[in-house]
Image (tube, rainbow, N blue to C red; front, side):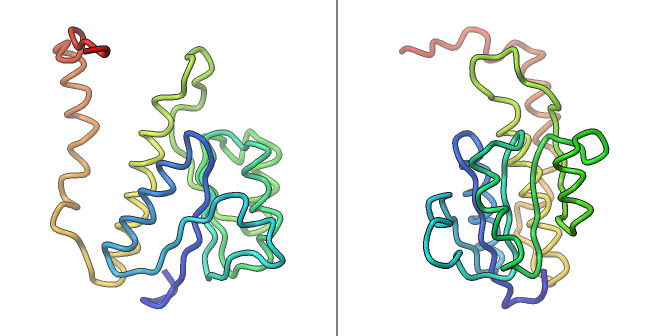
Length: 170
């Protein structure tokens, strides 16, 4: 953060909208100003005002590139993605231009009909980032310590087959 008056503008579309909204909620909970801006907000005469632009995009979708066109309007820009700047030329170029890149797993999720792992991983990634900002400001929510337990708890539930008998149409 740039201080407790930092204004975050967060955008994400499709499966990335959920993690973008999670980020806004966590930032708001720790007292930071955060607004979710749909991609359509970047078609206005001026982009949404803020200090930090955060774009969540599992890959780098064409729609995610729309807010990135306005990165010069923001003192800081963060891209949350599965693409590594060292292996993706577009993301590498963004990183060299000053965009901070937060990379999360999975690198590939192409064999699934729906992306299910990436949005969950992005949600954990942005929550950890928001908690890092909160710690710098001396504000930590009481649930923050439990975040590290989530991946292990999900893995244990899957290993036990806890969800294998779930009737999704009940």
